[in-house]
Length: 287
Image (tube, rainbow, N blue to C red; front, side, top):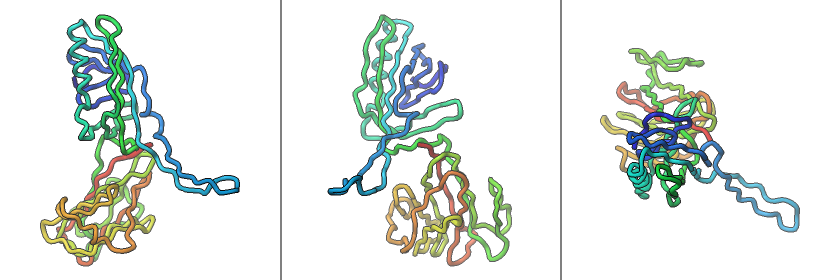
């Protein structure tokens, strides 16, 4: 039941089902009501009343999970096809143990969120070839992300050469010995959290945001063939992607995000090695 002929936008695709399309069996899936995707996620406010005084003590607010409900009408060419379509819809997101991507195709691009089913799927017959449906899913991470994954990489800076700001994107390091700098662009409207990969050999690596002064510094040595995965959203530091090395994070380090626009990043280490690399993966982000 993958996406076929498009009926209108936005198109919603999740776990083999696609709303606002005609599927391979000729069933038209019309989404007539959407809640929770275009609007912002709810706010979680923890203000405490000031005793015997007006107002409350101020406190930060946070976003709750994004709950998305799609309602619509399915129109099948015959009764048998309709019954089969009902069975297929009932199986969408049936595995509650895992998050799956919801892809939404809009006029200005494709965005995504990781979701799971959080309410019963409602199906109601209306006539011989049609039925109404309601599908509710929740994204624990309330942000909407670009479908495309952005990537960038650079070597350590050598003792000579280098790049100078302002930099043009994409960066071109050529075949010389300079390096150590990246310019990472978040085309969204809210900060996004990158995943870093540091590949050895590398001694006491540092990833620095040169615009804000924030940096992640590690008191360890990576041998040739070893790598460190640093997930800034999960706040994890994993050697070879499995063994925790969060204790190697040096005091004063900051888990910095990529704010909207371009973020200049510097990669450095105690010693220069031409094989060492810093790689970044990130998605543009919106509320």
